[in-house]
Image (cartoon, rainbow over all chains, first blue to last red; front, side, top):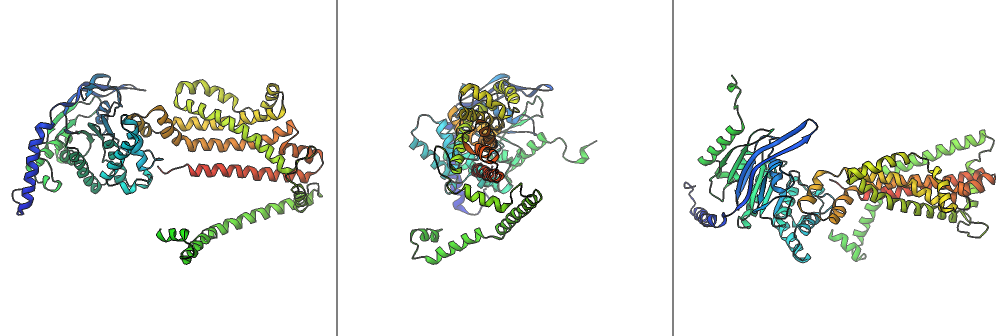
Length: 293
Length: 286
């Protein structure tokens, strides 16, 4: 960054960094999510299958944490215990200092495959969610919320379309707008960008952080992903999981990169590269065929 | 888009636009594909007419020829709405048949859809009701007629009862299937955002199941229309079935039987088309 020749950019970057430093201690006070010794087993026809075992993790308010690991390692299961869609067999999960027993409006979920209702327009899809999740507002206020959130993700002109008429990226934006519209303090993203092409994905990362910034970085975000670069760019910490069955947390890697992060510059950052290497070596045992002895 | 609005708001000032619109409409109606399908349709009719003519000449007019049937058809259609105590026109008979089908089918559907939904959403209810459905479903609708007669002591009501019973099963089974196969993704939405039971039904269960329900209804109305004729033959007095039996067979006019068959067929086709249109209207792209 210091090698940049254009002065005005440097100044604005500095201002942002200062505001970062000021904001962080104010915002990151309480624990937002607390997972205590959680195990999840399922009954199958072949007997009891333990998906995850003895997981403990705590996430601070306003923190972005990614869960990363191989397919079927139970990342989504851990996510499910936070959202309340999956009941832990043993252990407890606390969200905003309350024990999680079922899904609630304090936790917004963005599903892997968008999960929009195909018979409702974009507008109705968001409205029905807002209408159910927020009880204390009038119909007019709810409509305002929907309108604002649709405009925020630049989908206002598509409000009357059905999900079937939208591209994958647009559908995902609707799903994200829906999750933001109920104004949850915790946002749970289950492989949100997995089905998108690389370019759309990149844009969505920036958009997600933009939304998070607009909200004063108060929302806690937990995200499941397969993508190492995505995990580093977005998160404050990356949780690497072992392979299932009975998956556990292998290691938690901190990402101490300053925000706002620049997608283009960050990849040349030494710290970024070190984290990237560390994550890769945690996830992949053998890097080339020569390693096989 | 703007031009189109001009054309509807003020036709005279943008007459050319209006003409263009008309041309595109004409194109749609007389597209080559439609012309061909019309051609095949007429060809099929001609083929059927030829076979009919042949059978008629082979049976030495025991089966009347198309031409003779046409004469009888015109005769039957002369005063369709005649409604005297001693004679009722074909239109009145048709309407009375349709009315009975509508009542029986309507009541049957009102019972079948909620029960089907309960069966689809709850495994225990499914296990309780399903065996009964499987036993009763294959029973010929005509077997229900004497039971209806015993219950209601009235033959028109007995035929409504028969329609009611036989239009239950396809709707019941299709509704249950639809509800049982709602994708987890859709259910998750309701769970994640805390949909009320009412919202779950109106925004997830019914919209997803509607195409299945409509399939069931379409099958049901087909069965109901088939059964009403048989029912009216048994009950007598009114309707198309009675017309076939009394004026056709007992009256010794095979032509009238054929006329009735054609009318029954066309009305059945129209009923089917109505439900097919509804099915198309309520299917959506995922």
